[in-house]
Length: 414
Ligand SMILES: [Zn+2]
Image 1 (cartoon, helix red, strand yellow):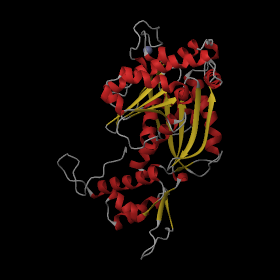
Image 2 (cartoon, rainbow, N blue to C red; image 1 turned 135 degrees about the vertical axis):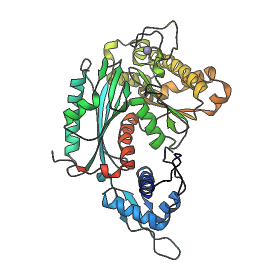
Image 3 (cartoon, protein in one colour; image 1 turned 90 degrees about the vertical axis):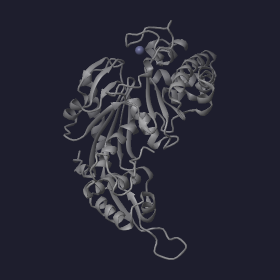
Image 4 (cartoon, rainbow, N blue to C red; image 1 turned 60 degrees about the vertical axis):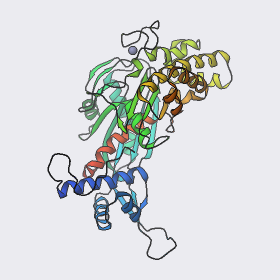
C-alpha cells in the first residue's frame, strides 16, 4: 500500500555493490516509521512480525525514533497467556507537523496535520473571483496559515505541502501552467517560502495527483494498486495510480484527462482546444444546464445546486444527469485504458455524488468494455472534499519518513 519494499537483509540495490550497514539502518528506520505513520499504535512485537526484523533491531530503531521525538512508547495491553505485554509504540503528531495547502479555483484550504495523519485544524475559504494573482494567493495562504501554526508553539515543523490546480514541476515547486487560475510560469514554492518566512521544505504538486496519493494511503480502500482519483471543480483534475505508483509522465505532466477530447462538437476550453472533458462535465457545464448564470459559480453555486437537487427540482436533477452522463463517458474511456480497481470522485463530484451516481454508472457500462467495466468500483472519496489537502501533507511526510531527522525545527510562538 504505497509502502517502501521490505527487502531481505543483504539485498543489493542492483548496482552490483552490497548495501552498507548505514543504508540498511536508514531503510529499516523508514519502514518502521512509515508503518506507524499509516497504521497508528502498534505493539513492539507486532511491529517485529510486520517488518520481519529481529527484536533487538526493532528496539534500536524505536529508541532512535523516540530520541527524534517522532514516536513514543506506552505500556502494552495485558493479554491472556504468559509473559509481559509488549509495549505499544505510537506516532507523536507534534513530533512532525506539516502545513498542507490546497489552491483550487473556487477556494483556498489550509490544514495543520501531525505525524500519523492527525489533523489539528483545517480551514477552507471561498476565493473571491478575480483574486487569482500568485502574489495575492501566497499572501492569503500566509494569512490563513499564521494562526493555525501559531496555535502549535514548540511543535516540530516538518514543512509545507501544496496542491495546486495546474501543471507543476515537482523538483522545485514551479507551476508551468494553471489555465483556470490564469497562471503561467509561477515559482510557487519560492514565493511561499518568502511569504511564510520558511527556509525549509516546500513541496508543490498537482492537486489531483495528491488526491490520488491520499486515496492510496488513507482512502476508501487503502492499499489498492490501481486507482483513478477525479476531482471536479471549474476544471476536472485526474490523478492516476497504476501498479501502486503515481503515473506522472516524464516531467510530471501526465494525467491531464480534463483536457481529453470528449465532444468534437463541444465548446472551446480555457486550454485553447475544443470539446475537452471539463467543458462538458465541469462546473460551468453544470451551471449552464441548471440554468444558473455563471455569476453564481463557485462553492456557493454548487451548494445551491445541491440544495435544489435535494428538494427534487426537476431542471436541476436533469442537469446533474447530463453531467453524470459526460462524467461517466470520460470515466469509461479511462477504464478502457487503465483498468483500475476503483475510481474515486472528489471535489464537487463528492458533494453531488448521490445525484450523479446512476447516470455515471450507466455511461461507464455503455462506454467501457465489458471486462474492465465489471471490475471497477466508482465511488466517492471517504476524505470528503479534502483528499488533495491530505495528499499535500502526505507529500511532506513521505520525505520525513526517509529522512526523520529533518522534522526538528520548532514552530515559533505566534
Ligand atoms: Zn482543455
